Image (cartoon, rainbow, N blue to C red; front, top):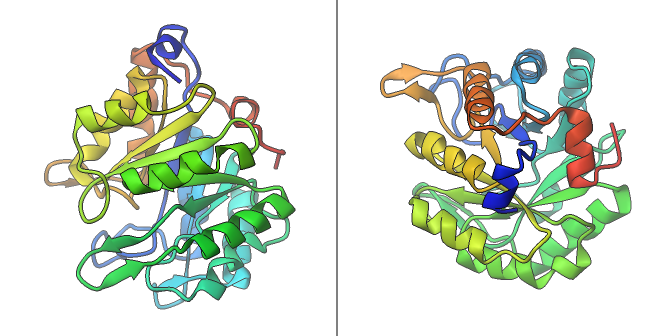
Length: 280
């Protein structure tokens, strides 16, 4: 992916991260938590231009859930509410036991995609995720066994090293997700995204996340560099300073910017072709 891809008008994949696993309705009253709420948000985001839906599951009390049963409830509701969007399950798990991290991969059918955190991560004051190489390898092995495309979550330069080391083990094209924000994520600055993109071998597709106020500028930069974008309430609660957003608003803005900049928004069918997915 490169500026030439932008000039060629390569379609852009928009991922909608609807829910997340940390903040809840105390942070945003309309954050979707129940399967029905998540499904309604998913349908609205698909209509607005999202071709990938990044899914988390929640317990009845709003806390994050990892069980395959709870993910099954969410994915069944989303499948019924949407037409053809790609479903991507989160295997990230701040402070979660390693055994639970495999559970989101075990729905029937398996998701087409799943996130794969590539190393240790600290978030907030008391939340950490070790993401040992042993765990990363075991998650990746199960993804390969079940035909699930991994999205490699690159929170910092160390995670980039870990990702580049396993490129030969990945089906084409490798798909890396660059995250920018606080904690142990990469500092959010345009030059840091440029450095990341320049370090990629040819043939690697990349996606960009900017947390909070960095979502809009860094995803827009990704559009210019031929990359893809992720938006949604998991990463950013605001449309602009002081105004809470909806998932649909954030997707619609990303789609509008892509079109204005000459990047057509990828359909689910085009997304599957771009990323080498097996189909829903």
